[in-house]
Image 1 (cartoon, rainbow, N blue to C red):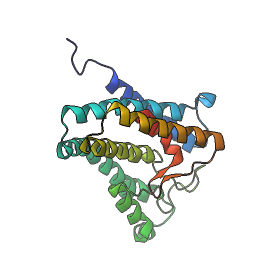
Image 2 (cartoon, rainbow, N blue to C red; image 1 turned 90 degrees about the horizontal axis):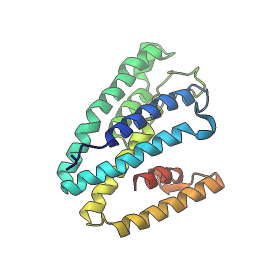
Image 3 (cartoon, rainbow, N blue to C red; image 1 turned 180 degrees about the horizontal axis):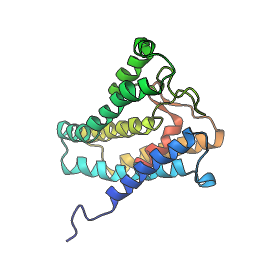
Amino acid sequence: MRSRQDNAFDLLRLVGAVGVVAQHSWVLAGSGDPMGPFKGVSLMVDAFFAASGYLITSSWLADPSARRFGLRRALRIYPAYAVVIVLAALVVGPLATDLSPGAYFGNPLTWEYLGKNLLILPMTYDLPGVFTGNPLPLVVNGSLWSLRLEMICYVLVALLGLARLVNLRVVSVLLVAMVTITVLVHATGHPGVLVPHLLLGSHAEQISLFL
């Protein structure tokens, strides 16, 4: 009998996560997508979300407890995430900023970056005077949006699970809705708003893959 761990999902998620960071870095440096017409950033993000959809839902079905589910997700992601945010704001920022240390630490944007990103919702990407000369100026760790969206998907699984709606019919309806929105976004070129202050219509693509 095959073990539950006898699969390549973890490898797929690892490749996807590394690819997201590497290729976002390429784009943020103003060099465009290194995979050109293949849209590598989207491909890597989609692969990551597809694998997570299977694994995270499997985790809920194996132990449908909102408390334990949330605790596992938090322990897996948040400690390392918090370290990255703190290092960016309090170590990388002071070293890379065009401002003096006093002006940097006295700027409310520094503490806004720290506070908002530690809360995850909402997020902010700029630190005062940091990376002002980059092709995309003032963007610090632009890949964070995908982690926020991933955690929103975790909450979706928990809510569906608590409502006992993790089944083929409900997921299929949600999938059709998200695919429809994705098609409309690609057809019109307008991201729109899926959930005010939370999700854009363009996020429907990743949610579709997760579903």
